[in-house]
Image (cartoon, rainbow, N blue to C red; front, side):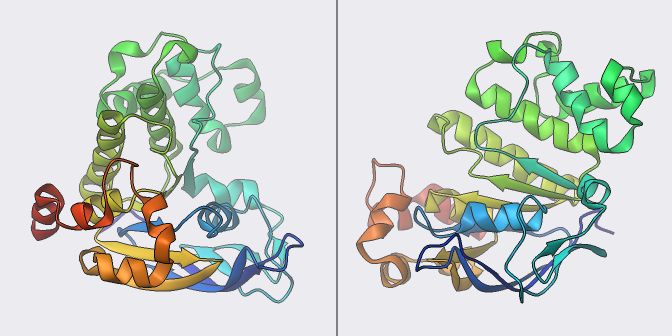
Length: 280
């Protein structure tokens, strides 16, 4: 049985005052234990959608409910009053890591426990031996336990993103929302982070929804892809079906923006490594 949470979004809309809506009646269902990519060019609504799912931002009045598992996060433009408690099951991975640089890696990971421990304990940093053991296990699962007592600011970008993933694991997240987690990383670090997310999804059954700027990573690591354009869902289906012709039809010349800057869309679609990973 999967420990992941389902996700349900019904006609979610959001406008920030511009003529084009940031989200336009987005409806989406994700089953427990799925790994889903959100793709789209800049301004397509990927980050906005993830922030609405977690309850950081409220949708417009008239928007339908957003649920994670059985927990209602928001409805009709209103975030539920006890969102902090409900957000405990939602791990959010930010593009810029959101670590406290002056604190140790271990302390940053333990911050994932904040929704689950009394406020007084979190303020003085009092964590039990069992909680510290849990943090150590999470660091080991992402391969950086040897860095546990270093200051977070001394780590590379890829290492910091691993700390952020470990923090989500300690939090007890049943769904991980990753907002362009590899956008600022070098190719090798990007692959490592995506492989860690895929392994967590596969081995622990945690649901993963990851927004990606580079379509080749969506094809390689995520069985299902949801494509956004100008706040609308324009594709929802198998990543293997995202060929060059479909991507050009969805995004036109803008599709070149969704690569790593070194390859053409045709080269990506014919990448033998991607093709083999999809076959597996």
